[in-house]
Length: 145
Image 1: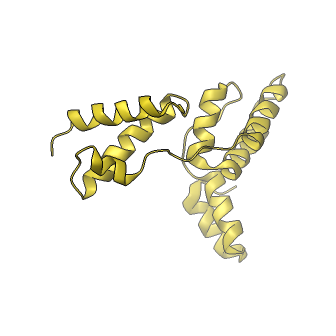
Image 2: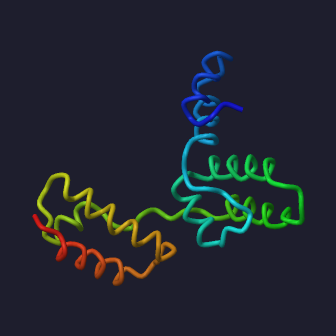
Image 3: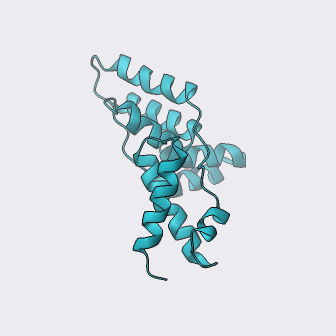
């Protein structure tokens, strides 16, 4: 297999693969967080959210194929099952809400949203609206504009 997303793109061009196939191959072989059979459900959901279901499943299958043979098959299957059945939620914060919190228009809006999103992911996609707004307020208070 080619090494990384760049190698995948080169191989896809040489093989004249369709763009969708090239993109899938690049996502499966591209960088990203390491996939191991002992990921917790929370860690697996975070990786599915970041990579997308298809890329995560492809990465799991590649990691499983390259793993030492042993008794970890149930763990690999569990990762695939989680990815196939879990629907990643949409990030619940909008740019308008960030502006209303006092962030001036411009690149800071995206920076604040990214900071809150990282926290939200780390909290396992918390659905508590109050907690999300409180985190937004804390991030805004801690930033210099």
